[in-house]
Image 1 (tube, rainbow, N blue to C red):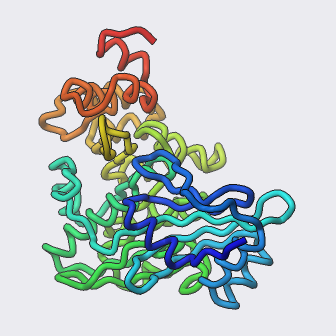
Image 2: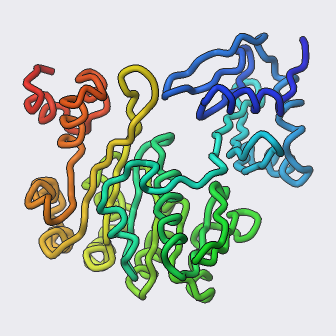
Length: 357
């Protein structure tokens, strides 16, 4: 079959405004536009052509890792095209497949994202744990980049990022950035975070809280005078707290709840929803820790947090996903069907919208 130039293909993906490119054997290349997969008008790929395209982008060291681990995460800059996060993996019959995520080279501001005003208040904090959560492809990395950009524009801080791989690369403005790739610059998230405490950071970004050791070290860093940003693959603020606590053995959970009740600053849970017409919009659920929330975490009454989030929102800056979804439906930005399909509380939302489910 006719060979496809991967550099040209990625250039076209960027030009079409797609967020992702997928290469899987026996399918034409497919891209994700506004959250939907769209096949390109190109021949179907076979295993050999995918391997040639994918291997042309990586080093011999990365090829060895891929062949040994059967997975490879990396970031790459293609001149005059853009920056990409790549993941190579094997499918049935040991056929190589790939997914590329486009990383914007321009760091967005919070204003560019039309982010809630409370985000600008959160970055003023000197210490604490701020979690940005959501499923894959929900824009967590973009939100974190905008939060760090706000700090970079306004404050003199040493910001240390530990990612797998590093996605957004910030230029030093008022702040000083140290970017570290897991697997290249440090062995693991837990190791990088452990040694970060000796590297005089003011702010630490942890790409993902993957295990109990990383979670524990992140909480400790937040307790000891650092502002820590991190991500989790959870769909709501309450689920995020449960996930953290459940990562530990039963005997440790009381101590973790006590530490989290003090160190947690905020949980931002988000999803990207298709708008009517074209484009997508971020929907945020925002939990801000206060005395009432802290007590509920400490006492293991996490199920009561949701109702607490609904109180005095003009003062606390909190909002529930249901509240934001209903607002977007009333503004005719998204459809009721879209809102319900993404809702974590569909019955509550349906009642609020006056429809049945």
